[in-house]
Amino acid sequence: MGMGRTTALFCGLISIILLWGCTDTAPVILGVRATLILEYASDGTTQQRLAVFAEDNNAGTRGKLLRVSHLESGLVWTIPAYPDEYGSRYLERTHSWFGSGTLYPPRGEYFQSGFYQLLWTDLSGRETSADFTIETEAAARTGGTNAEAPPPFSLSITNNRWNIAPNSDYFSLRYLLLFNEEDELLLMGSIEKFPPTAAALRSRYPEGRYIRAYLENRDGTAGLLLPPLDMPPEGSG
Image 1: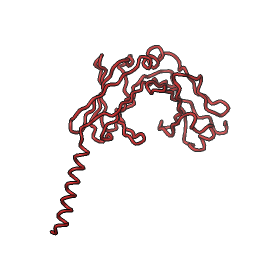
Image 2: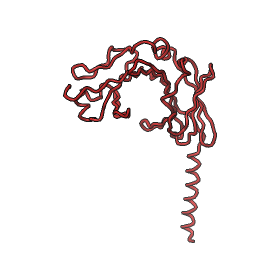
Image 3: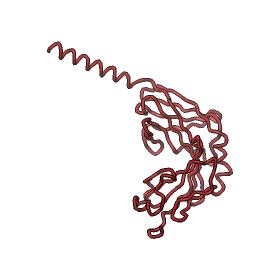
Image 4: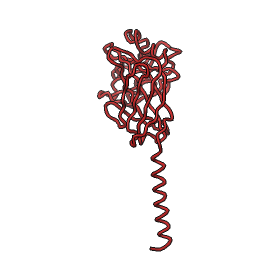
């Protein structure tokens, strides 16, 4: 074997070793997002849930599980690393976030405000953690007596246009979500960027069957998911 080929193979082997070493770095949590959501069903019932997503230094590819715990009560929620009925992963812009949007409190209770810890374990068993806080106001607006009252907002079609009333300084971010008969999400966007009329939406998504409105506060700590609104029949607007 010639010297040049031997040198090339050696350099290639070194590159593979260095690349493998770089991808197996110890995990570090770069950010945590936590949102308390109160969901209103069409039958008038409500369900509070917590959405927690974390970003790590390996783009979420080396994760084994994510564990969320409330430090005062000792309650623990475990999220598997790979999508199943309990966990999910999504890619947002250029960052990979891993977590779940469906963590529920014990039956008959609501998430408490206070300090929570997120524990991240990678495939090698190494762990890292980060703390986050559920604010008192976010907990109050999505639980307790609020969960027992009718939705404080309503989604309607007025003059063939979407309308969420009343306006709110707290829940100032407003989104619309379109679903098909199988409850699969077809489209999500801010109300300002959503197809402006029911007719425009129907022409782009004829399989769409109902719409839901989602409202969130500016810092992303609290949200409300309103009951479904059926798409108006064709010819009505």
